[in-house]
Image (cartoon, rainbow over all chains, first blue to last red; front, top):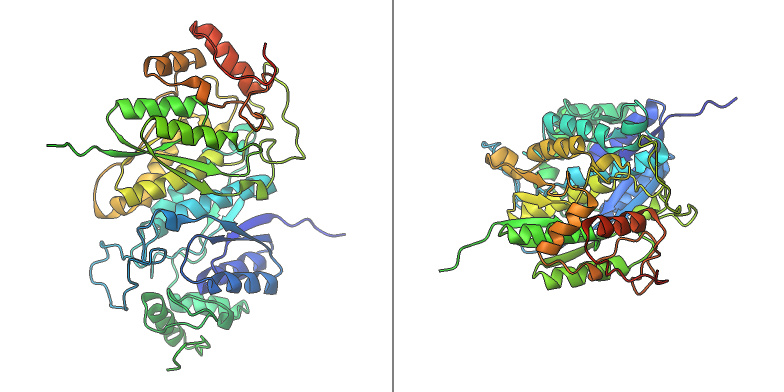
Length: 233
Length: 233
């Protein structure tokens, strides 16, 4: 007799954090529905990575078109703003230009729509408050406020009393701890893309904020970095 | 010397409620940015109406593609579910099949993204708690929770202390009062579409939930109903 698994929606960017979250949700026994967005990011190799990762982990995968670049305002979607080289920020109150306005709010909202249709009460997102790069929508207080709102937004909120939970299994982990967790769960990090300006075949630049944090993460975790770089170190 | 107007984002469906809200925001002195969605609704005449209304009221207008019909689950986006004829609901705790899962959450989130890029701190939405048809995401407690979340989600929440406000000028008005307000503000209701199954040229069916509420609204307001019906009454 097969046991019906609980469904969950997992936000999957194709980066290492969300890949780790997908592996984590799968290991927790959820029937995983991975959700990605074509939101105007400069490179599309990230979405190819998301598709490969979903397939590897037997998750249903949907890619939704939502062109946030129409609004501009971020180096990740706006060609007029340069992606900066990495420099350690002393002032965490200044938000970097790579921030995409309200991105996690939008992504979580669409995840909520899918969850409601699926009858899922669990949404997973790979936000992280340690290496969070100063993004407001990666903070625990934001996630809590979103969960509160979501529990007033849906059919279940009116018709039933089933609580929707936003899971953030990485929120208190360092990048090194995330890598150690994913390594234990069998995540193939060579398939993930973290770089802000990866080339078309998915090779990382090695110099942007995200690359620097990723490199340091592997080093601190004591795990071999199998990232594909455009210019090998 | 010209005075710089405060910017606002207004969710504009092409229906009578959002048209009234746009006129209201304009009258309040805002520089209006109207936002519509191609979200998989069955008929597109609604978006044509939104464009005409934005033009009439000198608002900048963006239409964002976001295909919520991919998820299914609503009579408004899913051909497999019939739009019901109107019948007065005695049980307001049962949500009608025309409800689109998490729609207002998603729309408000994208409005938030645009507002953040524009530097706008005001978002207007035409939700209504009187004739709200049992939709969970039209209730005041939902709007309040969304506003709380939005004030933790954005750059301003971290870098400044400017508060974002979700305006719901229609929330406590009856349909008749909305029509009276719009009439006073000069809204051309013949240009608006409320019907769940309007034909391609934008003529209303006259029989669905939305048509019934609209008809009754004009009657109660004592204002001539200039709606274009497919089959004249």
